[in-house]
Image (cartoon, rainbow, N blue to C red; front, top):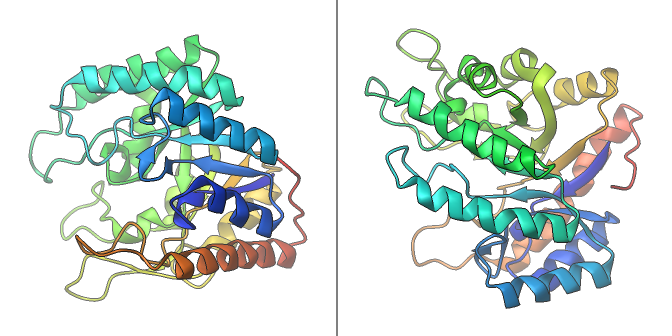
Length: 295
C-alpha cells in the first residue's frame, strides 16, 4: 500500500503541488489538473514542461484523474469528445509511467428518466478496451455518475464491461441517495457500498464527510475519520485483505472545487489543509499498525 493525493487541492501550480507532496514525505501524486487544466487537456508544450518538473523532483504519477465520462458530460454528448480525451491521455500516461486512469460513467439523468444504460455500457466497453489495448487500466469511480447511483449500479458496470476495474471513493456515498432502494431513497452507506464492490477495487480515494443536514444536499467535509464514511472500518478491511494499491487523498475540506462562481480559493488554507489531511490519514494508519510503502 502506498499514499498519494490529488495535489491540485493543495495548489493550482505544479511546483506547489510537488512541495505539498514532499512536505508529506510522499513520492507520488494523482494527477488531475495543472493551472486549471486537466492533464490530458494541457498543450504538448505545457505537458512536456510538467513532465520534466515531475521527473526532476522524482515524483511519480500513479493515477490520471481524467475527465473521461465524468459528471460534467451527459451520456447524449458527442462520443468524439471522449475519444479525443483517450487519444491524448494514453501517450501521456506512457510518458509518465502511469498505469491507472480514473474514468466515470457519464452524468446521472434525473431519477425516473431514461438513463440510456445500453449507450453507457457501449461507451465504457470502448473506453476500457482502448486503455487495455495500450496495456493500461481503466478504473471507474463511484461519483455523480451512473455507477454512483448505488453499489448495484457499479456492479452492473463490471458485469457489462469485461475487464473494468473500480476505484472506491469513501466519501462519495455520503452525499448520494441509494437508487437501488425504494422511495424515499435513503443516503448511501459507505461501508455497505465498499463491502459490495471490494472484490473489484484496485484503488482508493479518501474523502470523509457528515451526511447533509435535513433539507440540504451538500455534505460537510471533515478530516479523515471524523465523518460518516466509516473510514477506519474500510482501512482495517483493506489491511486485512493485504491490499497493495494506492490510497489517494481528495480532502475537499478547503474551498477548491466548491467555491461560488467568481470566488478565488484561499490557496494558503488549501495547502495547509491538504498537508494536515495527509498527516491525519497517516495517523489513522498508525492506529492500525499499517505502514505505507513508497509508490
